[in-house]
Structures are given as C-alpha cells and as structure tokens.
Image (cartoon, rainbow, N blue to C red; front, top):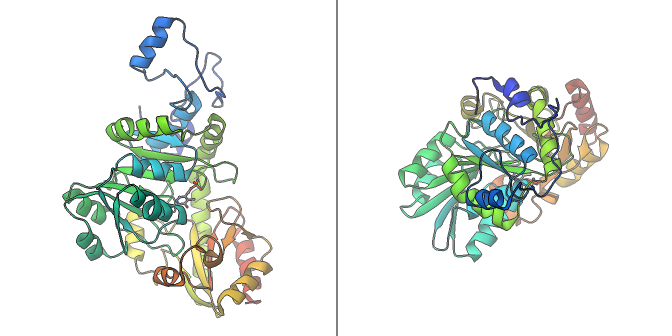
Length: 393
Ligand SMILES: *Cc1c(COP(=O)(O)O)cnc(C)c1O
C-alpha cells in the first residue's frame, strides 16, 4: 500500500478511499453498519473480511480505515487499529498481549492513566509489574527477566521530558523474548522512529498533535499485521474501543497539516527554551535540545528535534508558579498538549496530583514546575507573555 512518498505527501494522500462520487475531501461514512447484497454475501463476509469490506463500525469503517492507513504509512508500520482515545489504545496494546502470571517491566515516569493501568488494573488480573527509572539501562537490564512478556515506556516522559533509549531498551527486551509497547505521544509521529528502532506496538493519543486543534479524543495502536490483526483487533472489536468515524475524519484533516504544525511548534519550543535558559526567576529550563539536558545527544540522535514541549522550574514553588500562570495572557491554563493554542500546566496540582509527595520528588515534579506545550502563535509574542508573567513570580 505505502508508496515511495515523503512525509508531507503521505500525510495528504495516503489511505484515501473514494466513493462512487469521486469526492476530493475524504468522506465521512457516518454509519454503524453495512448492507449485504444477499444472505450469501453476509455469510461470506463473516467467514473472511476483505480489504475493502466492512461489517460493523466497532470492527471497522471506511473513514476510520483511511485514518489507520494514513498513520500506518507515516509511521512505517504494517498495520494500525484506531481507538476512541489514547487510553483505549494503551489499554488495548497491553491487555491484548498479557495474561495472569505474566511479568511486565515499565518505566516509572508515566502519564497518570498509564500508571493506573499498570499499577491498579493489570496487577488486579494477576500480572506482575516492575517499575524502573527508564533512563537507566542497567535498571532495565536487571528488571527484564526470562519470563518478562512485555516492556512499556513513554519515549519522552511527561512532564520532565526524559528520553528513553528506544533501541537499547528494545534490544534488552527482545533478547529475553519480551514485546515492546511504547507510548510515543510526546515524541510526535513527525519525530518518531519507533517502528524502525524495533518497537512492537507504538501507541498514540491522537487527541494531541494529530488532531492538534483541541476538538476530538482519539488513539491508535500501530504494529505488524500479525500483532494488530491477531492480538489487538480481536481485543478491541469485542470490547468496544472503536474510534468514531466523525473523529477519524477530524484526525485525517489534522494529518494534512501535521508536519507543518509540529515543526512550527518545535521551532517555537526551541526558541523559548534558549531564550529562557538562565532566567533569574527560573532554577531550571528543561528542553531536550538544551546542552543542560542529560540526554541531549540521545534526543538529537533518536528524534532529530527536541519536540514541542518544555518545562520551567519557577523559583519560589507553588505560589510563584501560580502567579506566573495567572499573569499569562496568550498562554491558556489547561492540561491538553500538542494544540495550536499554547498551553501551560502546573503538574503537581493537576495531572500529577494523585501521586504522593515522594513519587513526585522521584520524578522531579517540584512545586515550581510548569509544563509548556508550544502552539502555533508567534514565538516572540509567546516569549514576551512569559517574561512579563515571570516578573510576577
Ligand atoms: C494524553 C495522553 C494519553 C491519553 O490520551 P487520551 O486521548 O487523553 O486518552 C496517554 N499517554 C500520553 C503520554 C498522553 O499525553
């Protein structure tokens, strides 16, 4: 299916299925079911479903399929299954591979709901989970055992932007026969080489950069045809995590501009990080392209970019951080990311509130830490807004 096209061409043209009307823009097939021409055709379709055949929207839908094929082509994956949200994708990727008695190793720095699935849900069904510092290869090596069935990590962690060495962790996992599942949201599909580096199932919340305009929830699991069709699809089609055709259409249109948007945001993030580095009101500026980032070399090698996010540690803790947030005019206080609007988050009191003080300390989530998702506004305006607000810290 995938042609020898470069990224921007794939993002606009891959996966298109035209109806008998030859529409230019991708059609929304807002239908839950499909009509058969005969009883024999219905029977045949339930025995084996062809590439351009559909039964029921929980199993597949032409608009959803267009989105799956487009992102699979972009990522260089054989196949994909789209889901109702990023968390449905994470849950399906892990649950479809695991059973009671299995062992999983996961990095500790995780999105709150990912942590909940590993810590609370999987363990309830008899899966043993070991958490490690994802940046410590010796810790991975010590934790991955002969009976380890899966390894999980976020390729760039939230909110402190630690980078996992995908190739090295994947090699350790595969040496013990474990499959690798990676949540690649912060790295974005534009700077991703996860499939090429050997990840077995790559997961995205498409709610983030792929929609990128704050409209819809969505997710996707990408991998080999074997894993997607034999493990992920049966789990999802029977448990009901399907993406709505309308949301799939929004995601398709989001992909048209994905490369342009992500690169513009990443340019803005780098500019802000450089300009704010060493600011008198900040004890730390975290961005993977700054020389002070412990894994700057890895980020450059693995992603070729520092991504669209940065984090600032405001001197003076929570009160100072809140004063900065409240003084901002362009930046919006929210918890989404990868949006065209620049967003600021105070992780300690929102996304990471559930964690204990100790857990937050281990992850470097201080009371002064603010996370920034850089949008599409003019970077000079964003910087001016931030420096003016920092005067209030
Ligand atoms: C947002 C996010 C998710 C969850 O995605 P939803 O679409 O909100 O369900 C999972 N992982 C990471 C890293 C995220 O940022």
